[in-house]
Length: 108
Image 1: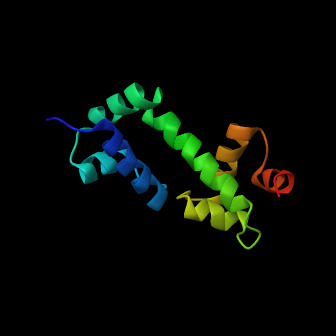
Image 2: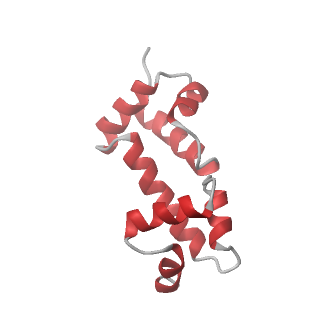
């Protein structure tokens, strides 16, 4: 089956943006392609894996949300699909070396 990699990845971006906790298998099913098709497109076009790309996107979304003072750290984690504040904090700490609160303080 022929597909347009750029179009596929644009649709993937929209799905991640609308539902940050979406899994690769769900994206593949929604787009009507095999998950390996998505992985191959990611490696070919973006030179990265789906997992690493999604991790970077989640981190970017978290940074943007943490800059909104009306959202609590807990709320940011929930919006990004984390099941607990601890798992969200762990993700941020592993990715940046800082807690979500510290990241918020340093990036007003």
